[in-house]
Image (cartoon, rainbow, N blue to C red; front, side, top):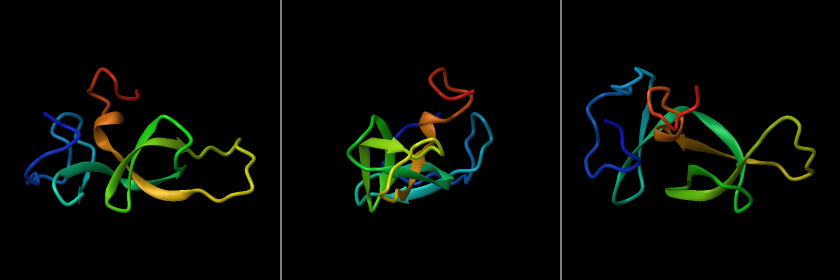
Length: 92
């Protein structure tokens, strides 16, 4: 079972539910399984969750090609729990 945060790091580098690869990151207290591919986002402007600079940011706006913005997005990692295909709330 996948969680947003874990007190101990998992032994596997893939999700046991959907078999997708995951990357374990540490925030100083919890281990967080994330998707290994970085996502680009704008901090403090949206409702998505991204791990960036050792912290979970719950107010990220994910970058899309149709966004015409002069400022550059930053790169972070998306926690896998939000994209796991075997979870009811995951993307299909």
